Length: 255
Image 1: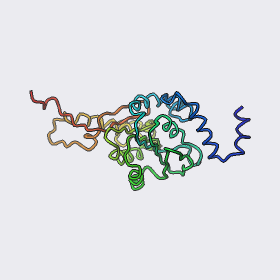
Image 2 (image 1 turned 90 degrees about the vertical axis):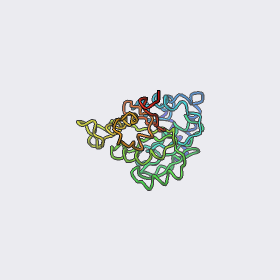
Image 3 (image 1 turned 45 degrees about the vertical axis):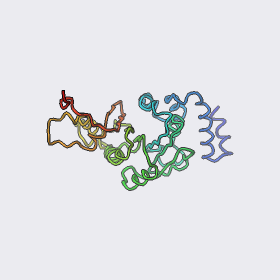
Image 4 (image 1 turned 90 degrees about the horizontal axis):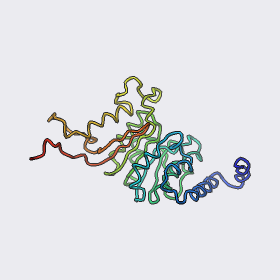
């Protein structure tokens, strides 16, 4: 039926109008299920469920802020160089977070995916000037999701540049960490603790959670030591929580 109806239907509308009509229809179908992230992922067609299995983890970490006024930045719109392809996860986030403003950017022009509460920029995740400019324009950032190139070097560069711009209490997410083990993405299969790989690098940050326990008196906590409160690893997915990691060692407490 879909194959028979859509071609005739689409000849009367532009691609942008067709997409808007589809989005409207999907929004109507999601009435009463806005808090079911897996359902929304399937409805809007994002690979965050099906090809990957991310949505239960996202729902666990995001449920407490679902109804808050937040700014969410997702790196990568999807659909490669096709202007009207991609954007599925952006529409999923918009439906899941009823009061959020959703931002994204891509190296390709994805402006056709803009709509109310969704804004899209064009640029590279390894262009520091571009990143600074969009952060200045967006303002506060509560959630950052890296679903961009998945190149190890790119992911680490973007994290170092954007994590300091995340609000205290914010969450930084890195998707598709399987590229840590793929050499054509700059990963390392044999040396899985290599700090130049995604997994190797983020595993190395775990010790910093306990920096107050280090007995080396000359050790100076890094910015990340002082501003990461937890790191959660899942299959191909990492959540990094930003906050003040200032707890003192119990050995330093007065009796």
